[in-house]
Length: 301
Ligand SMILES: [Zn+2]
Ligand SMILES: [Zn+2]
Image (cartoon, rainbow, N blue to C red; front, side):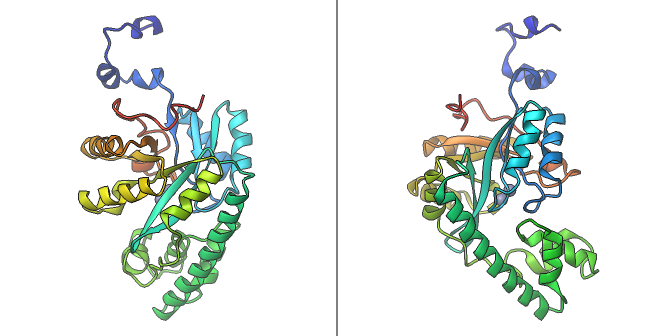
């Protein structure tokens, strides 16, 4: 079928989805993913190349609390003829919950951003020491040093502890490490240090960026609590919600679209890709926003 034929008005978006033609007619955005500068495993260059091979045209690299990979990713994106959006994923705290906020289109020279990264790095270092001590108390020898080695030059995240535990034979898988030691309520779950929504959104806004509430379904809260979270996020000056995060049900997507519109927020989408081999989080695979929302990129030009 020629391009002329598929632009005829008689062909609906729904039919394009079913014929698979939609991918060839829309720009594919993936605005949330990780490199080895935080807890992903691909280098920034390899990540961008993989995104290209998945037909992503606009990619945001959003490593946890660091912008270290962005210059390398931008150089690779230029070679691959893709658009790279400078991004970051900040950890924050809402009540007793850890909640992630993605900053998109941030100004890397912003002094507020540089202060934020410095402040988060200190918190991460302190947290890593505490996690290490707690794991030692549970019999995991050399946890902190092991996690540091796993992180290399990147920031230390909980998966680095998990990888160390798998490597040393304390657990059989990353999932088991989280289930037994690092997940919610477990010994290695240290989370009381993160800044508030207001603080994180202030940093992102000062850096001329767009603050996005990341992966809302991952928090596994009731709908009432989710709405309270979105309400607090909006009140703190937040801009958008990840209406699509990786592979999720259409019902969840539709509901998040409704909530996004109710609070007059913009909509974002991203895979939260960390490593190859996970169909649930493949780059660019789950990127189609419902037509009812206003995409976060509507005024990016
Ligand atoms: Zn996250
Ligand atoms: Zn993420």
